[in-house]
Image (spheres, rainbow, N blue to C red):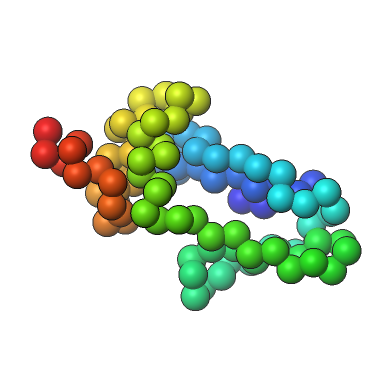
Length: 95
């Protein structure tokens, strides 16, 4: 999700766990859409800048597993890896 104030939020939907947040622009965001090519997001701010946001699929699961701000982070990482076929949760799958 990208807010009008320029913040990017990424949640794991089944648990509503906040995975990542970042202020991506100081300007107001005028429009944002899904980038169907990369499965990311593209937004345009009031200054006319075009911003592209994409998730690094190879590092998402390890990031979530080690995130201290996510309650039950290992389980959230496992669900993400299983649902989307992401790398990084091999040891959890083995258990």
